[in-house]
Length: 206
Image (cartoon, rainbow, N blue to C red; front, side, top):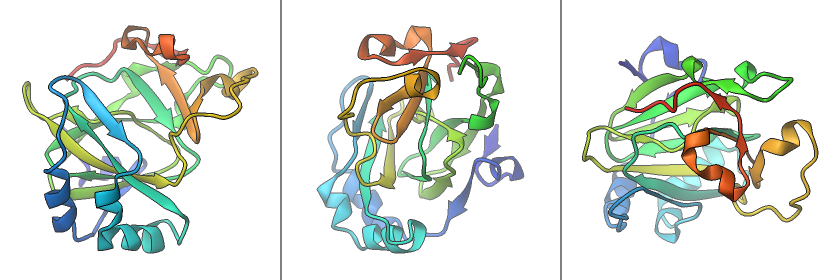
């Protein structure tokens, strides 16, 4: 299994050197659902930490950001998404990230073959920047019954509902939320929420 410290991770992102102790303590206080995952774009307790200012100033170049989390239990790919910006993921527990490249999306059909996905282990206490062209979705748990807790940092306003829901052709069909283009697998159930179904192959499972 590859890790984010291996050279193969470099096309997807980089490991960041940050003091994560206060964040790890704060996210342990978040109550998680018994099943599935939860996503919160902006968590006040995280945004009150000195880490928030450091991320905003040094990693995002003073661009306004939101600091939330994606946590719970998950073992499937289900979808891939990308943004027009980097995303910082902060692993408070061991977890896995299933990653791909935007360049491998078929430009004619906007389909993506799941066999191109690479999986990387992220040890607890590790922060990574995922580049804008990196396809990703919810992290996966590191064990059959294990939970994962992952901080998520993005430009402010990302992943909130769209105001203009009129979608045209081409890449517009993938737009699922603000600054969020998404390609779902048919088994994910996301089609009922308006997601574009275009993942070809197995719905990868760890």
